Image (cartoon, rainbow, N blue to C red; front, top):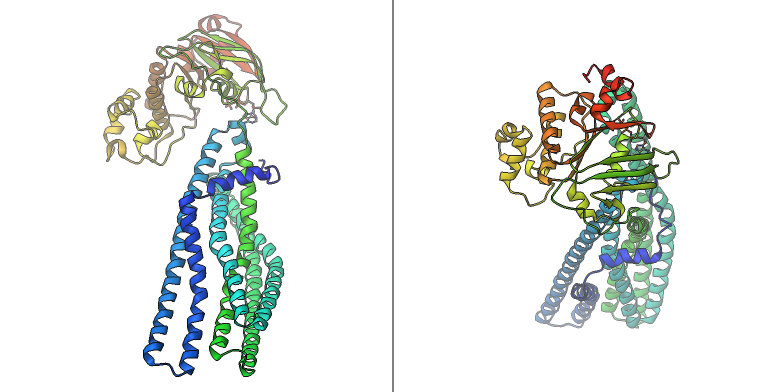
Length: 581
Ligand SMILES: Nc1ncnc2c1ncn2[C@@H]1O[C@H](COP(=O)(O)OP(=O)(O)OP(=O)(O)O)[C@@H](O)[C@H]1O
């Protein structure tokens, strides 16, 4: 599996991602006002305290002091309210932006072809669409809330203290620079240890996902003990990494607290000395003390953001790399003819999978008139599924042409292609959703009457009638046979002109097998069909047979003629399987 290369995307690709997160002008104006209020109001509060202290020392009346105290309270409440509004606005904007980005990424990833999905696991794509998007969106919000607000607050504090006393202002500025430098250096220690802990956690989850996915095989092969031992090893590595990270975190916190306490003590000492010298009032000394205390939180937030920034930057690069992926198949614009069976022609088709030089198919020539059916036979790995994929245009041939209804699939409009070519695969994909959604694949139409008709048509009518909530019942626990019948019902509803059918190779009970055979017969009525048959008995109704061997058609002709020919491979296969010619 190839992972997204964060080096690949240009800075313009990254800024395109950020543009998706950018709020509209009204939201930006509201957020700017809220951030400004959330910064200015806490800055104003110590000014009121100074007034209170100085007026109290000067012998002001209780009424006056009460009014000043109430003013302080009002400022504090307004400051909290502004902070809440800022957090709420930023949270909303983050959700809007995250949803836009997720939608775009999901649509983009679904639009990429099978070659891309072969290179990237679903887990990796989920991590892009969820983990990375959240990391980036969180950082953008935190940047607005923490970085912008903290820098504004720090600058405001230094300016106000400068205005109160330039010497103490100068000392505060020097102290802030020193603390900033020290904390940034300390982060160099913390960031790699946090990264190691995240990597250990990813390994644990990766191992768990793999083992759970293979639980059946693990149990059947008695590999449980080994799996649990491996789990212990990975969990122990995570414990060690997290322990180390926690130790570094605690030490940093303790160091920071001591540094801030020392700074506050120095500021207090300076203020006391300046009061003694008569340069400032006691109220101003209290003001300086309060401002010194206010410096700590913005610093801590800023430092925290340095960590988030690195994760966000990596996430941003990976998202941009995913968005920069282009589908290898360029969509055409010609619609396939509608309303009747579609002829199929493969002319000199050859194919090899991307990143693999081996030719999986070569020299394939097949012609099906509208309404004819072709049975594809061949050993496992002979190229049957690959041929079916070319007919569905999940890949383009490297040589030759695939024509459906006379249209080269490279030129075909993808919507018309999906509507006119139906497929029933072996591995029917069922969703944890209602029976209705599983039939319509989440489209609003057709209505329930047609859905029930389709279910009856494939022999699932009785089953559907017994569902507790009818078609709204959540689908669960279908047998392989039932799942395949449901896929037939889907195909009937789509009413395609060409059907590609990959017959289930799993053993089915005779009753289900009969129903499937009936459904196949009905589905192929008046339609062109390509059947990958795993049971030769299912080929009794096809018009033509192609026997594939190592990617080449080694026998091709009308079924009756091949069955009647004593020397044909197909005839021999029928004899071997004990199926009458
Ligand atoms: N996604 C893929 N990437 C690379 N090689 C592939 C891929 N899918 C199939 N192949 C290779 O292509 C060859 C033909 O495989 P294909 O699945 O088409 O055979 P098949 O006849 O359908 O087999 P089966 O009956 O087991 O389904 C095999 O060698 C297989 O390993």
